[in-house]
Length: 308
Image 1 (cartoon, rainbow, N blue to C red):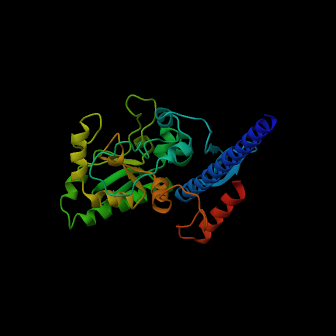
Image 2: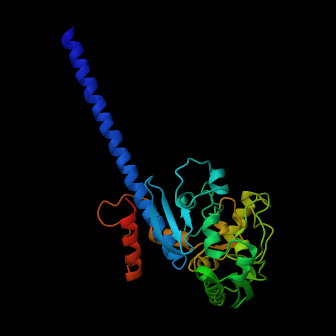
Image 3: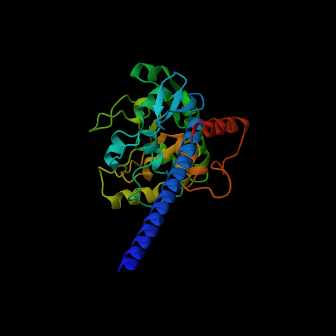
């Protein structure tokens, strides 16, 4: 009997130790993946807002911050669990970039994709584009394009990229004439207002969004999913690509679709382009896939020295 009990104890200890090692390995793998994802997020942010982000810091509690040129800090991840609604209404940077923007062409409403780009970190937007109506207005420039002249924010090259996007769309319209009817008349750019039904500022309030020619099937609150899908299927792929090529996300790729809406969010396009999925790198570097210049190498060095 004693031998049997001893054998059971030995087996129990072995199984406990095996499970402990397995849990430890999983935790180590999760931490490794978290760090890789964080580094990639930080790199695309530093590239997107190269003139606004000075450096990054990690405190003794492991919290990571973007340090802006103003000296203010923007928290990367508060480590708090959040519902989807909380991630939309009060996201940190990690929450914002958690949902990857798809660069693939689509033909219908994207069910279950959690609206990549619809969540906005206002502390970051305030630092980059202006923190009040007055400061934002000072950053607006009249942006001349082949479809007209529009007020748009000059910071982070937003106005320059709007010009490039609309002019690229104009060139595409020479082989696809229907593009012009989807663009013009433009419905609006800068408008200092909140998103209806919330207390959150619209991207239009920062002068970083443009609504193209309005159609009654453009918005998720106006029509059914079926009608929204029909509108998406009819939308010129060349028009969407012209904006994505220049740092804009398309509201047509949100589950809560906003088809006439394009928003300047270069960090999403960079992450989608260079880091198409979150994964542990077995052979190579976490930044593989991106073209390395001296400036990018300096940013990578800062990130590697900071994130442990």
